[in-house]
Image: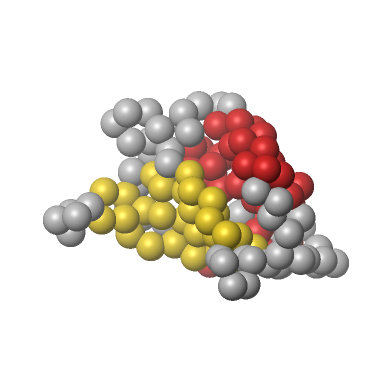
Length: 136
């Protein structure tokens, strides 16, 4: 995904198309929105790789039909991860990553390393169930 102001919306459209073609059993609208938010967050708070891109992967688990959304960026840190992903809004507007919890997804992140073990950045992951009900 090219890292620019349209990265999130473009990721949303591409995810919707790919998941529809793949006949994913889950809510395609919710999954594409989560993809949008993860990519937009990487663009706004992470760092693009030298080629100007933010890699995105969508993988459906063959046994559970859960969807794994992964977005890489070149910043190996994620300060405030717990706070920005909290479901409690406390009068604040929802962060982009809040939507993952809203759609009953599990959010995590880890340092991204190359084949030689050198730190390249991070990967943010969201695992979404094949069926969902938004939280209240």
